Image (tube, rainbow, N blue to C red; front, side, top):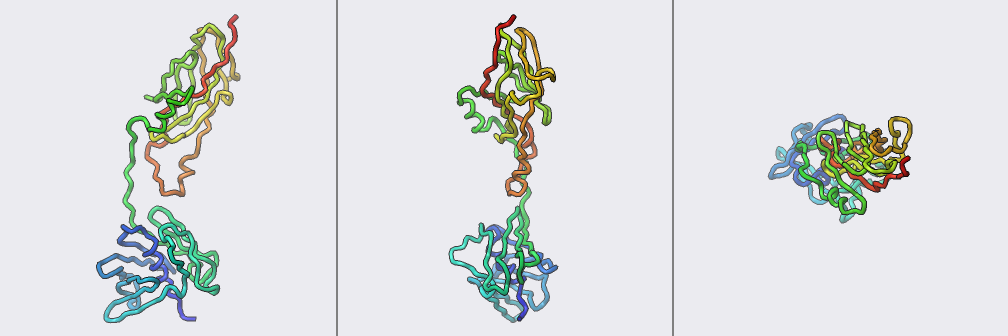
Length: 283
């Protein structure tokens, strides 16, 4: 069997799959690192043996290499099945032209990189990596209340409080404030009523961009003064550390192309819901 031009097939897939504004890319394949740069006449490659050096162009499934008075052509359709209407920018798999070439080619996308691989196969049994420069994204900083958080104000029984210097002042009939320090949230209470009262509410914590970071319902807290939830006498004060269920936002987005701002973990907004303290007649 004639030698399969793996780097030509990888080049063809790269041209079809990289973003349209990319004008240079590098392919790591078969232990070699090859760089192509787009010019007016085509894609120019120099990090190749002399026989493969030149300007690469693509027409349909045909790749033409021109250089030093010679022209070579490779029909990639001999190795890949390219259905009409395929969306190359989102495709996750390519079929091979015949069984002897192995299983379908997997296309895995990352920020600035595409990995080509086959579970078993003669083309990319050893994965190839296509990469290109990606502009570094500057950290964003939110200004003002996100629209989605602001809309919560209109939900029945919901109240929104801004966290300033690690505290959100509430000053309700029982809840005085919330203090936020890293992953610790402490609620302070002062009973302003004439009845014994026990806290009962749901709290949601949002970052400056409107991401829900965590939440808790007072039925799942560690309890007043560390000895379990209890009633507070009129005029008395109390506090408790809330058992916040924190969502792993960074892990959820770790495989995506969505960048997290530098301050994504900061709690900026507290939403209080179902604030309905239980009460008993004071002695």
